[in-house]
Amino acid sequence: MTASAAAPAVLGGGPSGDRRRRGRLGRNLLRGTPLLPAIVLLAIFLLGPVISAVFGAFTNSALSGSAAAGAEFIGFKNFTDLFADPDFPKSVVLTLVFLFFSAVVGQNVLGLALALMLRSANKVVRALVSTIVVGAWILPEIVASFAAYAFFTKAGTLNGMLAAIGIDGPSWLYSFPMLAVILANIWRGAAFSMLVYSAAINDVPPEITESAEVDGAAGWQRLIRITIPMIRRSISTNLMLTTLQTLSVFTLIYVMTGGGPGTNSSTLPLLAYKEGISFGQLGFGTAIALILLVVGALCSIVYIRALKPEVD
Image 1 (cartoon, rainbow, N blue to C red):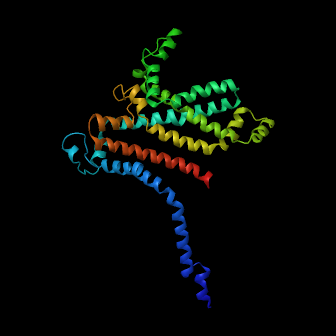
Image 2 (spheres, rainbow, N blue to C red):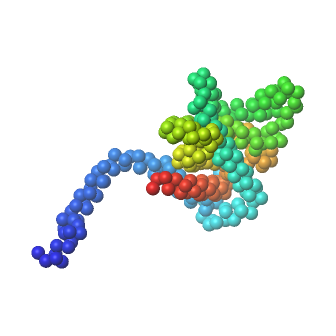
């Protein structure tokens, strides 16, 4: 056999190499067969609505009139009208404010603080705090929303507590609507961050923190230099999950303020609902939802890139 004839066999080419590749492909397809029903369901219930929303954002689809019977493709008109709408930039700013203070800062900081506290607390305190915090998380969203409304309303629990110490509280939902919904969302979602960080902190080897303590490192130094660097992957993952969840918050704000007063708490989900359902402009409302989807995708890319060094 010549060297040129032997080369394909050595490099995995030729008929035998093709048969091996076909065999591997067949085995991979066979192993993936049990996943086929899940892939089909994901395509129907996740990919299908996304494709439908993308297409609908470029039509004049509506709930009534001629557009309800047959929507027409109108290109980028919904987006040009949206960018010219004075309510849109305000909703974008309110969405970013709500996202940053209630998810990125509020839920993550409070969740980490609770996880650290529970690690050193006794069993009674740990059980009491866990019950209170997790209770807010497992409540149905509509129930939690009405509970938050009852707490912040003018004659609600918060002003009742302030009145007991001689302070006349304001109408929180009218004077400070964004503050009220931000605090309510922190209360609602802090339990998830607490559970994530509790699991991550428990995986930190105790001998490392004990060694730092012996070397004279204070509690905050151990937190900044040891605990946080060792759980940064969990922090990035939790940031991504809480960000995506907070971007889609609708029921909480709708029940507490309805997006008001005026448009002072109208985030993008509320604006999409108002335009698409209240005003019947489905195409216009879907364009807002598509922008919200893009914002969520961009946030996910940022967090995934932050996780990549850990994965590699």
